[in-house]
Image (cartoon, rainbow, N blue to C red):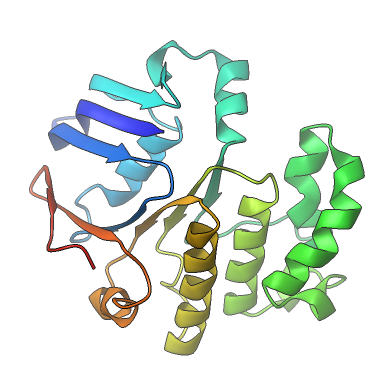
Length: 224
C-alpha cells in the first residue's frame, strides 16, 4: 500500500535519514519510535505525500509519489487518514461540522448526516456534537481528530504522537480505537515516544515496532 524504497531526506546540510526501507502492507500495524529530532514526523509526511523524498522512491498504492499532480495527490490522500499531534480545527464551526469537512470538500456532503452520528458515538463524542472546538478537552479534541481522519473510510491511518498531550487513561482509549480500526482491516502507523504505551497493548495487537535513530530505520524488537 505504502512503500519507501531507499528513501533519503534532509533539511539543508542535515540529512535526517538515507536508504530507508519501509513497507506498510494491508491490515498491518506499526509503531514508529525514536528520539526527538530523528525525523519521525518527516517520515510520516513522506507517507502521505506532504513531502517528497530527496532520493529513492515513495510509492502510494502503487503510484510514484513524485509523479503525482495536485489532483492525484488529493485522491491518494482520501485513502489515508492523518491524525496530527497538534490537531487543528476551525473554531467557528461545531465539532460535527469540523469532522464532516472532508466529506463536504470531496462533494459527498449527503453522506455526512448518516455517518456523523455513528462516528461521534464511536469516539464517545455524541453529546458534544454541537460544541465548538475551544470547548473541548485535549482528549476530546484528539478523539474528534481521529473521527475526522476516518470519516472518508481510508485504507491507512497515520497518527503522529496522538497520545502526546493526554493522560494515560485517555491515551489507552485512543489506542483502543486505533486497534479497533486495525481489526476492521485498516493499516495503522503510529509515531510515538511512549514505549510504556506500546507495551500496554502487547497482547492485543500484532504490531511491528520500528525505531528511527541516527538516520537508520530498524525493527526495534520482536513482533508484539
